[in-house]
Length: 324
Ligand SMILES: [Zn+2]
Image (cartoon, rainbow, N blue to C red; front, side, top):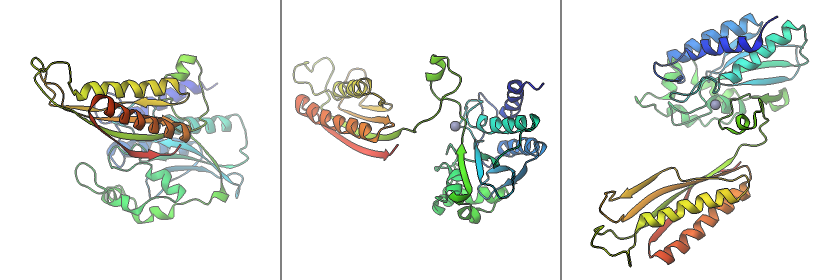
């Protein structure tokens, strides 16, 4: 009897070793580490009886055609990682369907549909300032301009793909016909503590949060920390603290809303001067676009009131919005 859990652990460990040196897993697309991963996956897919190809976007595809002419169920995830990423992020979504297919075969089950297991080259967008090229290619929504984007060493995505043996000019032709696709299933490690806290092994994703980001600048007046009385101070950081608290309050009191102030710069940022200016971010996420947009609007109202109350100049702009 095969211990499929142990089998998953062994394969996962083998793939984790395909990493740049250092803590965690660092596997960027179109690198020797990516190549090593493809070698292991290809061998395993072929051993499972799959027909293996590498498409023009660098997506490794293992296909089981049965019965011939049937619709195709796609399963898979990304092979790449963030820098010093987790050992399960992405790659587990390739390993699990592969082992599931092996198990079905071992059990003598016949698949009612064709199946493809996919390992996308680049999901994270760590190396190039673009992400999801492989999955966008399948959806037929790749912007050809991304091929000219460069990594930190000023090599373009197009050049890197060519050097990896791919034909970037064919990326636009990878779009699948929706009529031939049954669906897409991705298994992915949970990137939060909810399932673990609930002691549950598995959850179903019902939505992906929409995101909006705000850039906020508060301007007041600096002065000596000792000689400037508290009365009449226009301290930009005190105003910023109120905004941080409001973002947190909004998120804590609204179901399914997340609110975070993740970045802030203080000027002059010295111990004995009243802060003149603070630049900060605010980010809201929610599976409900209305909820997220209402939070953004509430933050802008709060910023206007804060300006009136404190005498600070507060400029609040929404810099990014992505629907759920
Ligand atoms: Zn991931």
